[in-house]
Amino acid sequence: MSLSTDEPQIRTRRVAFVVYDGVTLLDVSGPLEVLHQANRDARRYETVLVSASGGQVTTASGVVLAGVLTAAEAGSVDTVVVAGADQLVDGVPDELLQVTEAVAAQAGRVASVCSGAFVLAALGFLDGRQATTHWRHAAAMARKYPKVNVEPDALHITDGRYLTSAGISAGIDLALALVEFDYGAELARTTARELVVFLQRPGGQSQFSTALDTPPARSDPLRVVTEAVVADPAGDHALPNLAASAAVSPRHLTRLFRSEFHTTPGRWVERVRLDRAQQLLLDGHSITKAARLSGLGSDETLRRAFAKHLSTTPTEYLRRFRTT
Image 1 (cartoon, one colour):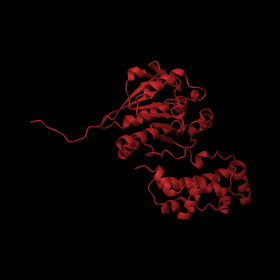
Image 2 (cartoon, rainbow, N blue to C red):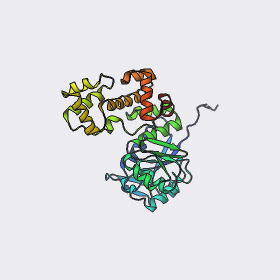
Image 3 (tube, helix red, strand yellow):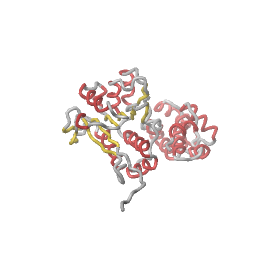
């Protein structure tokens, strides 16, 4: 008597990573590890490395990738991921264009990490589409490929069958998004936990927070103030209190903010609180609770901050960027 099972068969998806001498190692290894962890209880992804000539590839850090295939040897794949390197900003080699075009011909999705977007743009894949890349290269990409709608401050963007991500570690976010799309949010959460990373920073979320984007304070009083605000955005950070904590006058503290950060203490505190409110919303808190815990106070204050700095509403932000 034969036994049967009603358990559905899991489809294995083939993913090709396009690599070349000088490629950034983490642009390859980060997404690869995400897909590897997604295979822990079932073979969901088969990954291959592809280059123009196959064999071995030496990364920018000197690590050698072995077992690299040519496009012909790789055969048909479901997804192509083009890893980045600083050298691509100055020009994309013809052989890299050719291998990418060949392996992408039958793929359902074509993605890039960091400056790998320059390869997709050079092939015309991104014409008329939204795309992103490492913040440092966004302006150069917009100048070089004016037909591409470059979003300089997004972690990753999907437009049609093309996906582009920001620099380096954003490739992990991109790969988690692929896992969620292919096999659901629960597997993406499990994979993220294994990697000890945030479940996934939403694609349209900024590459920076205000705290990260602010240059280190040169003066001791300003350093004391900024560290205190970042540590506790919801604290009482009225100008007299901030000045007292730094042992300077409110007028002097305001001069320091304008001199070093080109803003006022009040505006800077508001941006730090807005960053915190965004994260609280993504973590599942209500608008009211996010406003209170971030220090913005009320729903209306939160809405005004979203409109002023992000040109959207908290509700629309959640609709666009919160995962299932």
